[in-house]
Length: 338
Ligand code: ASP
Image (cartoon, rainbow, N blue to C red; front, side, top):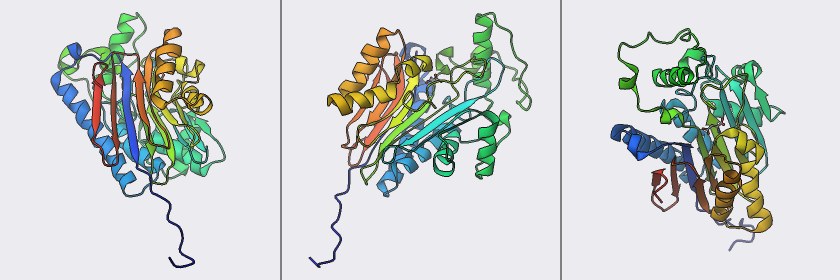
């Protein structure tokens, strides 16, 4: 070997895990076409992230590419297709974290940025801050050159009808149809969409790149019919999103209040780091013991720098997929699937 040759670092086997939200997602109420559409979307998004990783791209880039697809897909509660607040708005939350540097970016309550995950990334890369909220966050997005949209871009009839259904059931006031929304369709509500179980669909990605770095990202419209500027766990570092090369990367989904109180993402990573637990065991302990004990509901995906991948949820379903270099794509929805 030539004296000054640079020793080659062994390449890591890349891997990616994706979730599309946890909740009361059941076979009995799922239409076959809807299920097919979810599986196809999960596949497309996961493969897009895998392509970035396979080409030697970073875990952060893979996460952004994957979440862009899910944010553009009206099936998921992120970007276009996000759930509505009780006031009839779409207020989006997102976070991203780099396990190599512990840098993180997060945004809450944005209404005009097409891809909130890219805004979280911009906060991390281009600002001295970790978290921006509301109109200020949108202003930073515009200043950073991100694609801006009218708030009506996020409107979908399906989510709108789900909101009205929920508010009627809870005897709460109904907001006016948002400005810029398409005219109300003629068909009855029931013909438009399956049951309100489908109000779920927060999205998240954890990835391991060929350099051995891990990262996590999450994007959501939050909880349907939320009020008063409510923010969930997704953009809270350590709660719904966390990544450290010293332990693991996690993205959560579920009723965010519990995830915040338990700092779920960080908790999984601490069990791995300080108790030496296997990733799956740590994820299961946090979801099936700690979250369960508080009567919380939801799930998470996780990955370690040595390539362990895990998911765990205590709801009837969680849209999920994983793929590792040289392996097979694995997609699941219900809790009786592996
Ligand atoms: N965790 C999200 C929130 O509480 C919602 C979800 O994952 O479904 O905002």
